[in-house]
Length: 628
Image 1: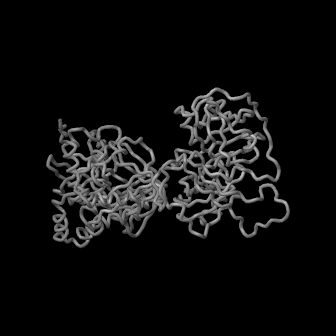
Image 2: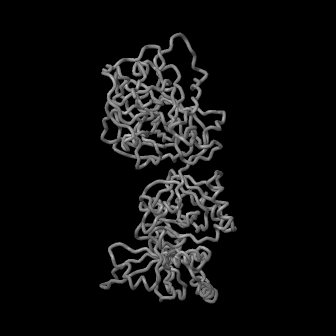
Image 3: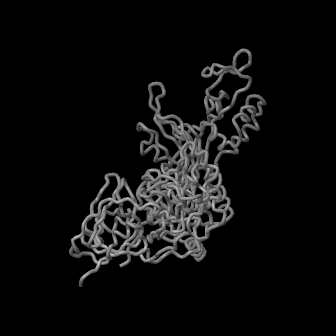
């Protein structure tokens, strides 16, 4: 059966046509580019041929063999741009009509031609029909067939009031038309997008060979589900940082597109917008209900178990436990907060989610209050990072967003499942051997295992968690006098001595002062069902165990000499059970190597979370018998 290609299709596209949906033939396919996968087509209308670039979202059609040399295709969404004085067709969406066909006619390659003057460029008034199938919290129903769906053309970008038509339009003076984010590409001259800000990063400062600088970025989502990150540097930061607000809709134009750095950018877009000194960002005062407030690609918890380490994903589940936040000292010496919660869903699995920094003070506190009061909320995690150390867990990063009890079918489905019996079903944790409230390197051990497994005898310390009871506390030298001065952003804390003039002297700081600090140096014996051991508890851990400051205890014993009250406090703290976070390291004492166990953190036992941990442990240990 003969095939008639659209006559003069190549010429029409060069003249500005974007609506005819021509039928053309693929004469050649070539893979170009070393850093990113891009395909170049040679298209024919049987009389003329011209090169075309395939949008990266269509690369899979080439890889899977759905389009080949000789294929008859219909161009659905396309533009024609000038690149280095050459006209190039950019194919944004297409459909293969006939997979294999003989070459039609004897077409000739059209030489590069310049666009006619005063003729509007056609590259800004089309919209791709490729839509994301991700979940979006919007009243709109998602499209069922991405290739047959054509979104409505958005109205032209209206210029600000100070734009006036005065005679002939100068080059680059006319306003650009609004196009979808998915249609953005570096081959366009002018463009404008209308999108909602879904996330805004913190203002960060940096220093490199070029000097000091500052940077921030924000993420955009448009009505077609397209997402892209926008980044601003230095003076551009001063213009736009205070202007951008999460949830607001903006018209953005005159930025440059560069390849996205995927180690920092998790969005499903190969490009990233960099705003410049001449860029325009205008707030849309009228709320646009066609643009959803957020877009998700939820993964069931059971699938996270097979996810790659460091991958970024979205997850939703019921919060079944929340542990108190604890201070953590980072490698750079700065202290931050960490909080652990557990999510479960209908897949029969649960996962630990680690909150860091401000997430603990905001969403973490709210979630803990809800769970402690018997309410188990739905939590949606946008852009969580997968950690695979000894199991899988999810951690927050700077671009993570948390949504408590969100709207949407996924959240409502989880609530219905949980209320109809899901709360009583047993979930298997994919975060293995981890105590509730611990991070990935907090492995639960008994006191006997610490000795039997030779922990602490390697080059690096071992970090474990043990559930044990305080059975004895030494009262001799339970604290020391410490330097209260600051060195940089940290306290000195070195031991000080009292001079003859009753002032305290720090040899490290070489200064004297009227008062000193008192810091715990507790020697505590703890015991579990397998044995007992001695541990050392410093300031914060000592306060958690004794329930009062080292200065109070020092005054009771040495200033007031109230041995009765001092003894009552010590005895009242015995036989309490805790979860001890322990650092185990072999150290040299004189000529002898000894294993020292230091208490890093003390937590009261949360019996609800502990019961779930024990139940999960039993579930993992009992083999599942197959039914035949």
